[in-house]
Length: 299
Length: 220
Ligand code: HEM
Ligand code: SF4
Ligand code: SF4
Image (cartoon, rainbow over all chains, first blue to last red; front, side):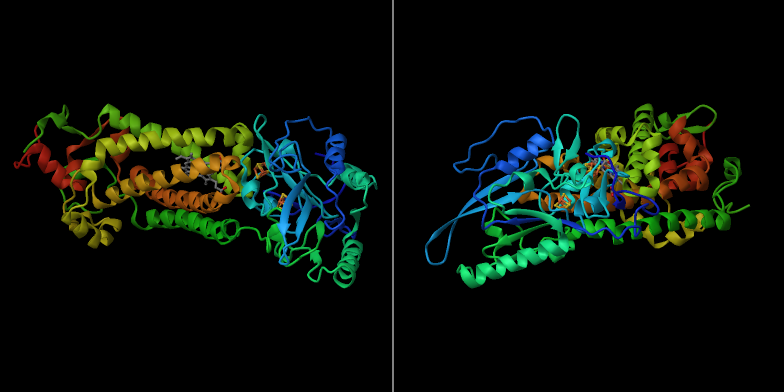
């Protein structure tokens, strides 16, 4: 979505080296979402649409405060509402700000076949470049969080950019600015992990949430968006936040061993046929040789 | 039983009628397009092929449609040829002797009918392959409409589609090699439709017998 002022460390569907790989010591940026202080006001949803100038769409009422069932190509940031009954019978309202997680090892990027349609900047932001997108939807299959969404008209895929354009100018993302309770924070990954760790400790020790913890899933190399959860042992109750997200094994198999096997087999097959021709040649040099009948063999 | 209607002037034998030849070339054109655009998305090193064919977006848009054309032509082949492609005991013998076939000692081969066992394998490989490619291809066509709880369909399709494509690429390479290089005369049979008597007798003796009847002297 934005101009690549930032250097790039990973490129989808790219042959050869990546220009920005290992060229920068910039720290990784991170958004911290403290679900325990979110009041579900949706200021961040509005700020996202405002800053990114996204067209308004229909909301869908599903008997909760949720704006619509899931994010859309033009609605990148959605507060998920869930009623959760705790073991002691008490009720909790869980609210989770859902958007792209900016995975350190993004499945979307691994799956994408188009050169430069998905890039990861050295600061960790994963950004889609719609000009290069071919609309194949492989990223939808690669993402363990169900984030990339297709614009049905242009057949290009969109998602949260972590406000790359703002971040590259030293500003924080629009959603962070809008949050009235201060449950959103933005900074370096190290700082955010420390803040999240302290907050979890506080929840465990002073607020009767013995399982409170930080969500920074290692299966995708950690994420550029981390959560503080009241119950980190059960992230699924927060609108299906996967417990141990990974790039699907079939995507890994497809982009890894199958690719190598296939390439070796195709090149090997071509060489094999060529050598066979050099060794044995055509079955008959001239059709006419055959008039003498079977058994002619090689001439 | 003899089929003299297959024998055309100049002592040649009609091997493929117009419908068969047309179907073959529609399938071939569609397949080559599918192969080129598919491989472009398979490997970043071949992405330029999609650019050369009108742009990657166009390739993505047309690949599935070419797939439908390809599948329709393979289906037509099934309608025309399935009967003749049935495996027989002779085919089992043929496979046992395949090393003579691949080393050009065709005189040591058990007699083949209109299609030898290798050609039958090619046909069934392509037939089942195109069914698998069609089913998985449709999933890949509309991944955004596959609901999240059915996502295993997408996970399977991104594996099975290219794996099946690779299988057919293997068949395709051997097919081209046989038709263009190894069996001189085979290429003409899908262009003009006929082969020489000698070709028929050498590569498809049982078929040849069927056409000329028991007396194996070709008519003039
Ligand atoms: C029969 C109907 C077919 C349909 C509906 C279909 C559809 C698709 C779709 C939608 C994709 C995703 C990206 C793209 O559009 O390129 C794809 C990829 C691909 N297709 Fe097909 N296809 C069909 C047949 C074939 C055939 C006959 C081949 C034979 C070479 C083939 C080879 C490929 C390859 C190699 C890929 C890329 C896989 C990858 O990215 O790893 N397809 N196909
Ligand atoms: S749809 Fe997704 S995977 Fe396909 S080219 Fe666009 S960004 Fe890449
Ligand atoms: S959450 Fe999905 S879209 Fe976002 S970086 Fe991770 S894999 Fe890509």
